[in-house]
Length: 97
Figure: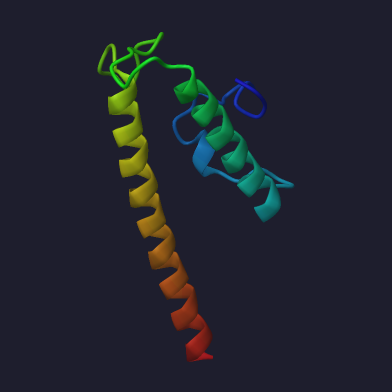
């Protein structure tokens, strides 16, 4: 994996949920877009949705591309929902002033 995912401690499940000193919105968005590009490239090299991942993951053993894509849709939807809640909370704070 490319930086910052190759750094010591990056395998800590909470690592990706913590901001590091010097993190910026543009930097975080850049990491997300880079991850999306890597994922699209990996999927484009698969022959079918039934292709099994080279490395077992998610505590499930072998998973195929179809499972991975559905999992990513689920995760993205869940976290976008979290952002909606944060945006609404910030909007409420602004109107209380």
